Length: 168
Image (cartoon, rainbow, N blue to C red; front, side, top):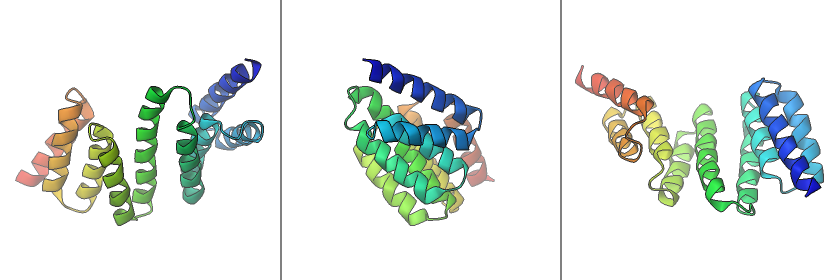
């Protein structure tokens, strides 16, 4: 029980350091936590986010992938499902930043196949397609995302931008 409480406190502190943009402090805390608890989802998850901010993209992807492995070992699979979806989009976003468009789209195809009702996958794909100038395909993906998240104002605004772009 003491170990669980320590893990919760460590994850909370890591989240706080990440929010304060104290990336190196957060990474140090996560490294310490991983040494004592190698299967700790949150330590890999927060460390990956820090490495993304620091543009250490390959290391961030490795940590996100390790977090995914550890998510499958977690006692709360429903909660982990949402985080796994988010991590998938974060990995795609790293590929997008690196201009690895084909790899990003391939990863998205797998993510969307696994989670067909997750609007984040369609939203990210719409962003990539928009970057590529494929506005109609981007609009098609945003419409699917809105079908799954009809009250998401960002999606509705993005759709309006795409429609404006296509019709002007």
